Picture 1: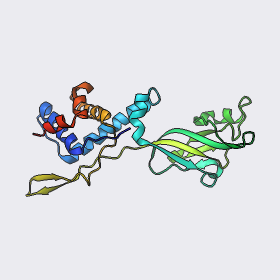
Picture 2: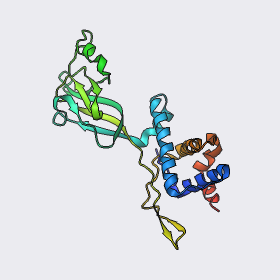
Picture 3: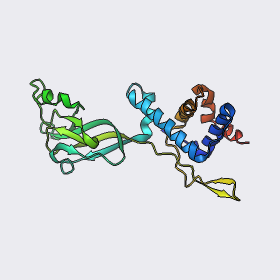
Picture 4: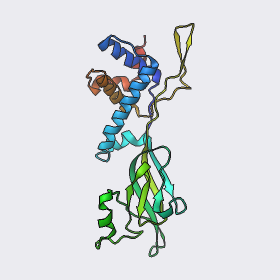
Length: 228
C-alpha cells in the first residue's frame, strides 16, 4: 500500500486554514507537530483496538507492521527481548522441525494472561510442548514462551508511527522557509490522513465529518489551491 504523499507543509497549511476558520487562531509548526502526533496516535489506538475486524483496518496499520525473527540463541529459557521499535504485539509464531514431514513447520502460539499459566501448563487436553506452546507478555514487553526453553520463530508487531517534525528556518526575521527533506513526514496512506485531520480538530473542539476533508486528502491540486 502506498504511504502518504501528503507533505507536512500542505497538511499544516490546511490545518491552519481550518483552525483559523473555526477558531480564529494560528498554530506554529511546533504546535502543529504536537497536535498532529496526538491525532495520529489516537487514530492508531482506535484502529488497534479493532484490529483484525476487517481488511480496511488492517491496511490502515500496515505501514507500521514489523517482524522479528528469534532463534534458540536469542531466546534463552524461552525469553524474548522485544525490538527497540516494538509498540504493540500482533502474534508470536514459533517454528518447529516436523519429524514426520521432515521440514520446518509454524505452530500457533496463544498469548495468554498470567492467571491462565497454571491451567495451560497442566492441561490434559493440550499437553504443553514445543508443538503446543503459549506465551505471556511480561515486564518491559518481554515475551516468555512456554515451555521455557530456547525456541525459534517470528514475532509480528506494530511499531509506533514516527513523530512528525516540520523542519524550517526563519529568514529576514519573519519568513518561515520549510525544509521538506529534513522534515519527518507522516507514514499513513493518503486515505487515512483525512481521519487524522478530523481527530485533530476534535481535540480543538471542532467536529468535522471525514467526508468534509476526504477530497482534500486525495487531491493535491485542491490542497495547493488553499495556499493561494
